[in-house]
Length: 119
Image: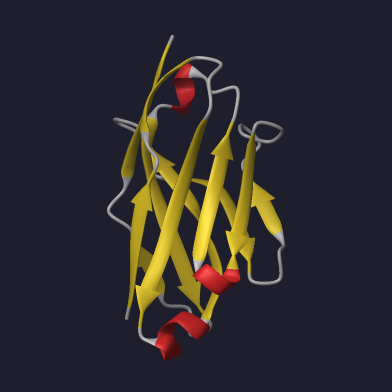
């Protein structure tokens, strides 16, 4: 099993920045099987949506709404993924969830961290 622990959320003014972190822990076999990690978000009354993902090999994917403002990175040795969020907008307000996918297509989810952007 894999556990994901997010940190770094909070309240920020529009135009500001936040950095989210997500550390994966668990047994070595499960951790070594993780192929991709990433972030989703869910705003009140909305469906959960993809924000960004990164594979073990470094391939990145971004939602169009965050391209040019958010940057995802990963420290494979620490089993940690980061999301640097710059030029935050009011519409970025949401609960951000960390996710990890294994080579057996098992999905793991964190508890979520709140990001609130004041306009």
